[in-house]
Image (cartoon, rainbow, N blue to C red; front, side, top):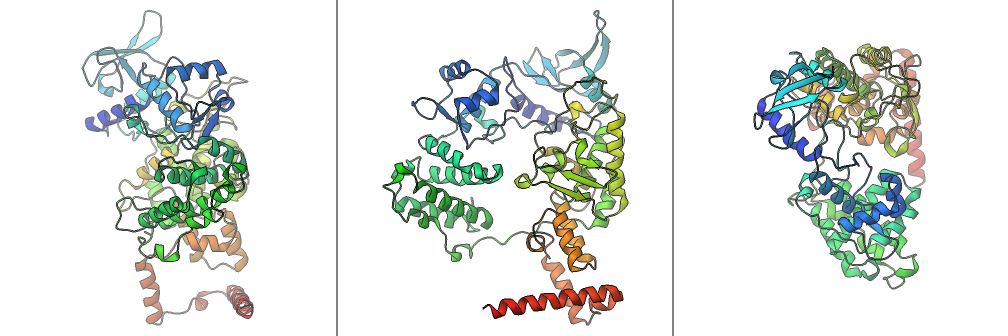
Length: 552
């Protein structure tokens, strides 16, 4: 239900309209199936993902699911599967979420204003809610469950800041979008069998790396109008290369970042090098892959990289202390914000944490890449960074709160709104674990709540920049700086220095001005022990540079 005291009627209508499009269902729900639009799936893959029989898939084809070609066994593009199931959900009765009512008047699922919700005991002895449809003003009726009662209770709290909707399931993870329910996406299917064969080879890569390669391959496929890869010429490769050179220019409406263009070109070189080794591609020009390489001059007109703002650790502490804490939902947001800084964690990693991943006694986060969503599936034991104790206290308080509510180690550390029960969970020996959320929206929302009265709007990723910057503020030895970078999940200090906490133009000017005005060198502010370590690191750096110069 969206109508907390702080929400406007306009926002309620906008939220309802999105949920009406996204939250629909069919006779059997296939929500949350991890389809990716650029991938290609065979029948066995679909049986496993949807838990259906081959006969069901045949029925889907009869109902309009489009296979990539007429060859057997079928293969299907992920975008085709997504579009088919989205259409089916759009034609079916809506699946009600917590706090949502089905209106028999306008035939829609709606979230009524909380002021119109009244309690009623049904004749069966069950609890019921009566409300008024905000769209057509017809009466609404619903037998309530625990999730409904929790959300109504919190929305009646005038101090509540909850905006629960949109935080749980992204219905179309690959991203056709809501318009796909009306517009048929333009699909290029001719190369799907080649891509399916490449996917077998790409098992050597991490999933996100595979997605990056597929994005480049599909982009190339689109530029060349779905032409068979087996028939590509150097002119086709040059056409793709020229479009990449165009899109890196800052004056283009559809420009891409330098990093994106470089990666796409690199992925296409790699893909066509693989193609040239396949028997069916023997007629391709042997130097075809080289035509996707870009000259350095192509990036001269690229837009300058915008340095993203990040808070100082003191500013982050101030934001955390100012966050509301009236409800479980508010305290969850505080804990999400705090742990992002405490472990310099990415938003997706934060949201996929379970209670077992937090070692309170050892003051660390156990990042298990096999059970949570970490970058490149990386596993590590991350010690809590030495930042103000309020961050650790907030995380520990949240951890203890969930344990008091009978949440277990396998349960999500940050459950979705519908799984966040203030009355506690029933003690059932073999109950299923509370799942983690499928999207990182809750992390973005937590940072938005923290920044709502501030001068800047910081993203969850800004926490990593803050921790990276803090390393430079402390007088650390070479070994300490290396340990700090590794604790951030970086293989070397160079990664920290290259990608995090870069000087803005203002900061750079301030530092240079301090030098011009004869400010005391940093060495003067160090203790004797720190001076020795500083000089040791300096001599090591000079020695290393001397060796590199000697090597030419």
